[in-house]
Image (cartoon, rainbow, N blue to C red):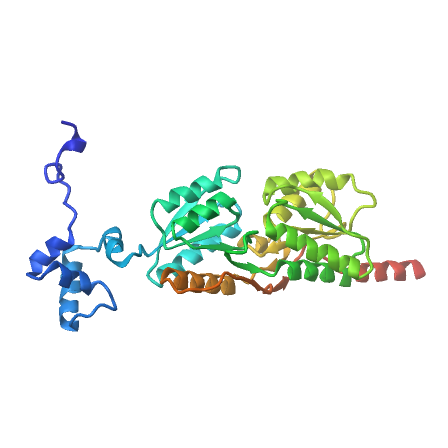
Length: 360
């Protein structure tokens, strides 16, 4: 007989306590003890306190799966993320997990590679019967959405939107954010603009580009040149510098789809093209991740309204987990502001100084 076949007691491992063990220890019925762990169950407060105190003493914890057979809820929120290497998402996952735990929701994280089968990751999660699934950094196929619906698991998209009208979504107003970047650069004298694009299927990328391009044209500029980087990654941004080298005339203001893309792009144009930032061109990102403020980057960027986005997402998850009926909707929250650092400059001042110099 292998060690795995050996009973727990014989291997020296303490057996897992059950609600029956706790009830036997207290001399109460299983139903009475079970009710003590449900905040809204009818039970004398003195009895509840006694059960909870004894459970803490002996190390008993309710089995969420056993409880789900009674409540029809697992209190599990599934988080599915495909772009975990993007610095924006680890920060969000950490804070979202804390916020969900604060309302007694258990978090199950499933990460899929950017090139992997995201739908398969969702199917894996569904085997644990989450009350709600929150999708970060990706969308779902129509088949996967159908499977979530059949499983009775509502889906909330965070920072990306689905083309499915039957889904909930919480996102920054990316069109507005893109327009703000165009205004910022134009107001500081930039006239030749470019956009470094990421995933063509990502709503964040599409909307930021739209806001940026449309506002530039509205203000009388030629449409910004578009450099297709393909991904929200440092490597994609660095490679985009090669495409930038072939542009003529060279843009003087560049907006990148997110911060990590902008950081890669800046390193690329500095190292491969020998350009100086912001002397030769200004660069703006989007997200305001922690590393954007590092002195080595000091990136001008649009700050996402993360606090409001998280509050809204958690509230939607709470309502859906308690089976509160709600019509699917998308909430777009305005950016928290544009943070000006050292990767942009006011070209009007430089042009004025040059003009004064020539006048003398």
